[in-house]
Length: 296
Image (cartoon, rainbow, N blue to C red):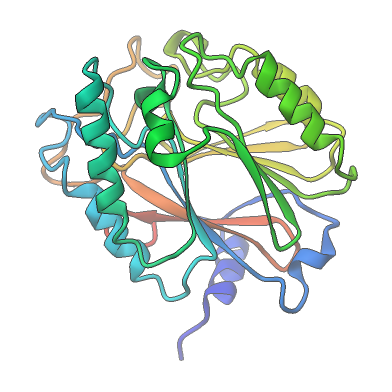
């Protein structure tokens, strides 16, 4: 007899599977009847990338992931792309062509609620000008089933900062929330100093984390580092997502940050996406998927 998705997540967590729980303990309303939901995170598709030694199928992995998401047994409440939708280019016209093409490709997602945020490849060379033409604001908030979501832009500033204006906006938004409000923050770069020498940090990320510290139930989802990674800043959990184009090395494992070469014996290895949902204990249960849709 088959099992439903929630039961799978519970069993996988109990058995040491691919589920990672991040604390939302105490927010009982999220796990109550009628409150269950989940979302899908995709990241770093780098549409327009060319590099056969790294990925000989650069226009195939994003459509594969879209097909896999569309085939999920339970449709997600929403889908979020956490940056680097396109690969960087110095040509403003080419940048817009890539953004337009990406938008056409992801229109095949069978979900009316798809959210986007930029990565530095999309926005740092023109401070998000082209991005806004296609996707609107680079930072915003929304609420869903008792959770407050904050999308933070730490890429439009080429110096890898959130910036004073956006930090003030974030402070004002948080001032309206009770301290037990469940909060999820989406960003592209990590807010903490993972590997600053590899550009795996946000120069004023500590200021954003300090603002979040008084809130008891905070989780950060980000991209940029092209691999699954989990970290805690006190009670705040940070989870990075895999890429849809090529993996990058484990932080500090090699002298230089370079894409992991394509392995013909294990194509698409290290590429994938994830589902996230508050589980019955009102923690975030994460399930990792390969690009093909198989559970990682």
